[in-house]
Image: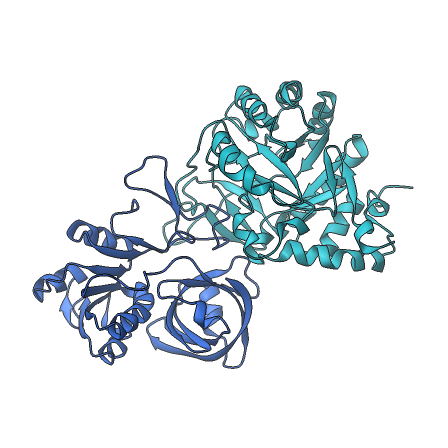
Length: 247
Length: 307
């Protein structure tokens, strides 16, 4: 982890309130799927933690949703402008997941970190299937990007405007997907449902953070087994084995 | 004067090579920052609060951004004094910097217990009594907002302590000078001021508080003028060294605190914004001192009211 001035190579809208930004970096070799960066924005005090979506030589991609003034400001940034980026931070997915068949489940803005994971898994010759959940058709992104990896992609929308109507769990049931190893990222209700059904794999968490490096204790979660044990989402996470922490 | 000597300042128990100390709760035990720079470059470190037993702290969300600052309601999460002695202090011993133990508790006995356990730890050079945390239901700010109670806990801690005792004051009081005087009378060796200002934010979508704890402590540049005012008032009313804290983000901010009467400073939330900020401040401080006509730290202390 380090602070770096990154050049914005691209910043474009890819879905409703959703943007993709490509940034230059000299740390791409240190980046792993599931990790995040903490971005400083002029006029805002706290950095914005945003997960890394794609890692290439000398550059990386983030996909973010404009949920507040800070991310709105980020969406106004133009190509060639720079950002103060602290990262890569946290612990992502293991370098190699030991199972051969992996089901990737993403919900909304939880989808981005799963893309680089899917790329890695495909490179490692795993059998990968993807189920993505969104609220509406307008919010869908990365369907084609996953398909381009030659992976089976199933989309669920809550309002039924595209794909299977309902949650990602409804879609998994309807498609009779029987893979037992899961890598997931998304809203808490989705993660809770996944935890009920699956016992093998990993989940990535979101949290309000301040430092992003494990010092401030803003983003802690309790361990499921040990009463006094806790984990920092920004440091030991944001990726944890399924069932490790209290949701 | 050489840059190294310009920044040197001696306070009770603390021989600081420079006046920059990361504030308690904003730096953990330094482990994360040690991946970024050599902690021996710091004047000192005020480590995360120690309580007699481990504390998980408050529910999340624990932080919220504000204009020029942030609210936090961590709730003194720490592994407990025994774990700190076993796991953190031996690791901190490798660094050439002055370690200050921030001491917290739910009642006076807790403070005394923590001090007694830390007394014989050579790595600890001074105690900082946290009688000003706004985020715990018992102890904390309750002890820090009444002169008699603040004096009482200070006296008990002084009796127990084998090292100098600094008292970290709360700004959430009508008259901070009165508290400072009471604490001086009770035998404190120094003051650290100020802790966070109690505040809250509401979520416009839910109409409910953003923080799970409802209220939190405001820190960051937003509180700097309040801290400057309080240091200025207290420095002229008591005869104790003051470690200034509140929104420091630059070497210029440090100079302002020195002029107000502080002898050293703690840097808090800016460590979250720029993890290198303490080092940058240390590097820039000699130039800033000279730019405004100060030969050294000592030269600048209290210049705002000194004749």
